[in-house]
Image 1 (cartoon, helix red, strand yellow):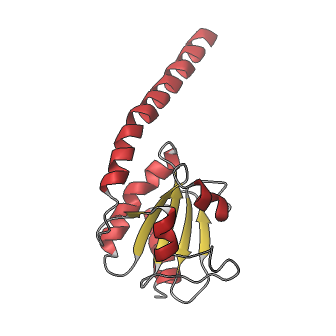
Image 2 (image 1 turned 90 degrees about the vertical axis):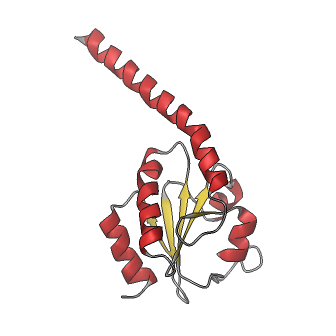
Length: 159
């Protein structure tokens, strides 16, 4: 019995590791393909783009000043993170549903370590909701779509 449990554990670990490894190249290709800004999908940002489009914390370190023309969600994620993978298609759906009303940005914490450090990101996914003219709000974890929609409507769109 103990041998069966050990074997199942090893097989499960191998499957999980191989799934993560095979998805790494696909995720990197998707990130590069999605860099173009379109209103119908999430937008992957570098630090330089973040400073221009979201918040220039280098020039304005003591006061949040959102640079965008629409409210935004900023998703700090990693390609190897299971909950991040789970929430990614939900964010894509929300980007289409709220097209023209909000931006949904993604920051890869492995690629943009300076950004993750600047915001003290210790757990992923971490979502920052950036409303117009108000302080941002932070949510950690992969929330279900209905809770994300409620947060978008309450925090970002003030419905």
